[in-house]
Amino acid sequence: MPIALRTDFDASALRREARRAKDAGQARRLLALAAIYDGATRTEAARIGGVTLQIVRDWVVKFNACGPSGLIAGKAPGKTPRLTDDHRAALARMVEDGPIPAVHGVVRWRLVDLCQWMFEEHRVVVSTQTMSRELRAMSYRKLTARPKHHAQAAHAIEDFKKAFPRAWRRSHKRKASAARP
Image (cartoon, rainbow, N blue to C red; front, side, top):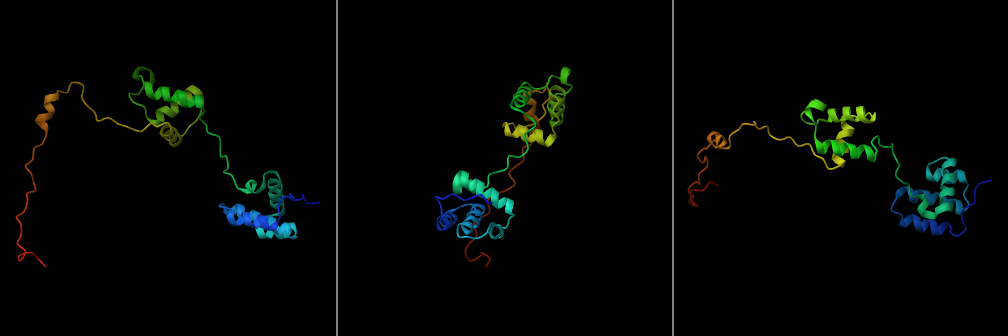
């Protein structure tokens, strides 16, 4: 015995909702259920919706529970992230503190180094792409400072700057009669 539809709606009300629907999938589902209200079989409703009988049954259950809004397809939850909030907090501390060359063996963090640290400290395997995505989501950007020698003299920079004469000069005004066509 099929599950009965709600009695507070009818076929014309569902068709009206389908016309107002912003989601095409919801409109398709509403029209299939409207056909059931009109007396069509569940098989015919499945053909109208382009699905199987089991899916029509699921639509009826959702419609009975939540009404027309229950037929809007939600976003799939996706895979759970590998890094938890605790991992992200520890990662932010590591990035902010920077590496200690004697301890970490590097003078600046690379994605590979942070992935290795995450595995050694938390036993979480993260790819460099994922690490990059996580750092960007935490508002970190890859910035590399221009190298500067520790004993560089400030006045020596001016001696090596190039001072070229202006290559461009204003041309003389042309007369209207001498202008090219």
